[in-house]
Image 1: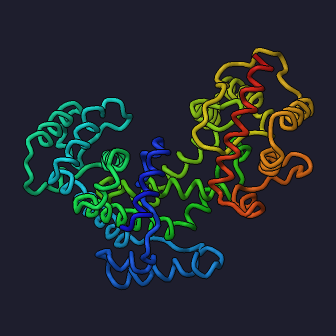
Image 2: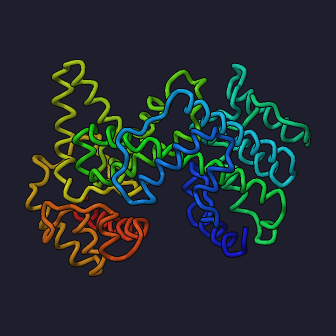
Image 3: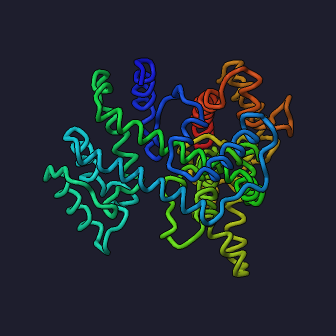
Length: 402
């Protein structure tokens, strides 16, 4: 890994600590074809992956709608992911510096929502598994690690982020880091393969999402967010969970769409509210249908500025609004327009108007990709400017309506 890549990796990882689920690396000199060839996949499957990649990305043609994974291919990919996670685990146990990073992660695992540590826990409780992991890491035993003691992906991700976040520039030259980096790159290549081969699935799922989510994100953005859900599923899937990858991945796609569409709204609709509303409709519970539809309706009056941006906290709409009748749509748009003109720069204001179909782009909301092309920047840059602008508007509106 050259000096520029090392510096970029350390800088980007340290400035985005909230991204603990993915495995950050820097762009390398190897092509996708070369990275796929380094994996232990069958030649026929490798050929199909490259063909799918060329048709979907390299040649800029329309994504293939009917690409799917067979059971054998699912097993092949999942086995390769597990073996690379196992290799990551072995490298951690074999190096004192890496073991210390893992010890810190395991010691603090009670802070995480998912507390599973190993691939197979032998029916141990979370605390028993944690104590076993601490003993193993503290013993300094560098012998081979059994497959059942392979780290779960959330542990792998947190260890990797901790290593990269604390390592010095000079330490990136050490063999133990370079070997770990190669394993992470292989895991990311496998993740990308899953994304390429499930484009049709993501499109199908994205077209079937609730109208509540469609208020906040465009169809194009939904597909991209859904692919992010597939990426998260790819690191975790194994046939031993008892379902096909399409079923396993669909859960993560819906989960990611729900999270990003609901959390970024100026007035938030909690996922619990949406789920209770859906359950009431399914059960024909008219009282709860009326109750939750009214909450959603009042929150949806702010749909002209609902945001698909990531991870922002906002006012919760679990409770009934304090003002009878809430806001009239036209009045709200006028208030928002004044706030945009007053608080935002010309560029930020234009980005917000394009993203949410505000005048002069009325009813023609644009995806982050489309806005990025207009300004000649990446989608990430648009998201960053959008997030900053949205935060200013939220603070202003919370003052106005407090």
